[in-house]
Amino acid sequence: MKLLAFAASSSSKSINKQLAIYAASLVEGAEVEILDINDYEMPIFSQDREELLGQPELAQQFFAKLGEADGIIISFAEHNGSYTAAYKNLFDWTSRIDMKVFQNKPMVLLATSPGPGGAASVLAAASGSAPYFAADVKGSLSIPSFFDNFDMEQQTLRNPELKASLIAALAGLK
Image (cartoon, rainbow, N blue to C red):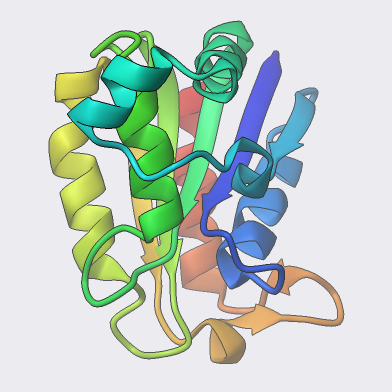
């Protein structure tokens, strides 16, 4: 199984990237590729820019990566209750190639934050809209208070209930 995992964050210190990497490591036998959305940075999307630029090569490459995967894990960072600007821009450009951005791939959607909300607002938005973009969402999970629930040294969830919930969500990818 080719598994693609990434954080919907451009932060070099992203806790969502740590969560995506950790989650991917729990999928036994998977060949994992970790993407960094910073590698797909493009001008801010607008119809005017699309008319001028067409479909940027980076958006095409990102779309191809999604298509090559057998499963996808995304962990969403939350900025002011919504997607990060970096992810939203990448998504907007990619959706212009094909509205079926996720190409019917099985997916697990995650989110975390340092606070007790666990980026639940952006996770709800992502989970609610994903089917419109051909995502086969097998599970979703918000991890609240990341630094209380994740052992940074061992790179593992220390909360047994959250770990069990994550494993259950990931089981849908097999």
